[in-house]
Length: 117
Image 1: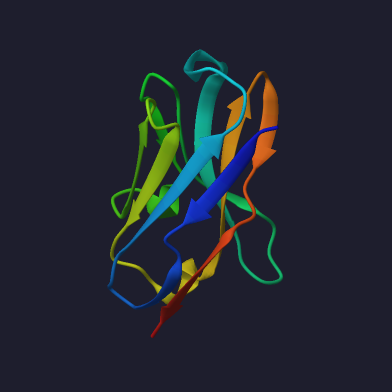
Image 2: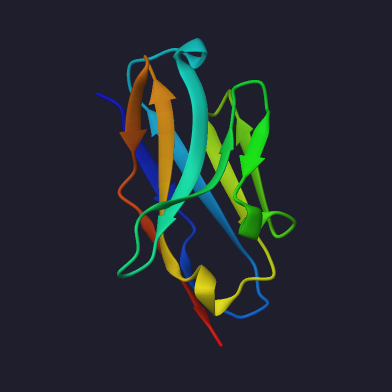
């Protein structure tokens, strides 16, 4: 059974920083862990892409996150990170980790990020 467990969310003031982590566990090898990413969903909104990263390290960002957010991964630890800086109140949302394993899409339970003005 595959599990994705996020951590690192919380309350931060506008302009501050947070680092999210997501660890994947289960019966799979590193080569089965393909693209990983972060998505977010604010109340009343659809879930949207934040950033993705391939096993080889190629990254993709939503336009509004470019220059403020950095996605990275440690394949040996089966973990993906999201470093968020210059946070804005509109970044407030539940952030979800995503991973493609064995060709299937898996999601974490989400972690709340709240940015106060």
